[in-house]
Image 1 (cartoon, one colour):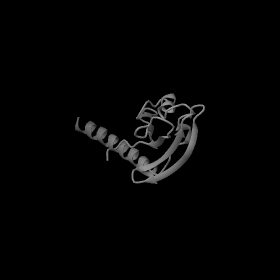
Image 2: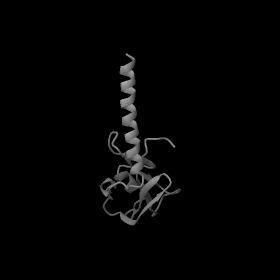
Image 3: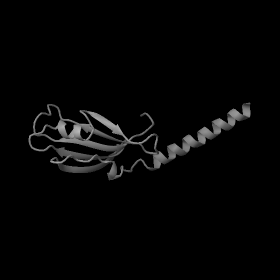
Image 4: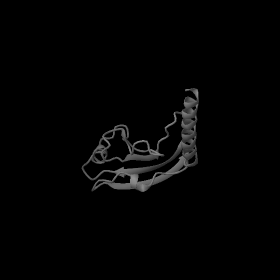
Amino acid sequence: MGWIALYLVTLYLIWYLSYAAILFVSEGALPPTWRDPAIPAGAEVASVTERCDNGGCRREIRVVPADGEDAEDPAVEMGLDGDGSRSYGWRPTNPASVEVFLPYGYRGKTSLRVVVQYDSPFPY
């Protein structure tokens, strides 16, 4: 019985360490652009910036709503109601998330910030 437990623990450690190695090697990677949410009709992309720092890389997309819309309207149309996120996939090697940040007092013609980045399964 002891050998079976040792064998299972060894298999789990090999799997976990190889998973951690893949994440470590790909830490500086950006999610592919197909993971970016579709920008609603009438809304404009003001800027797209990609940056990397401690904690990984991310793509920030500034979206200006169409005339007569609030900053929250494109977020709702993209499936990101208010401040929230949407994750892709069930336990893929690199789960990615899309988050939207509405500026404080967002009513009126102001841009919202959409962030696309890989999530780390390891707590910091």
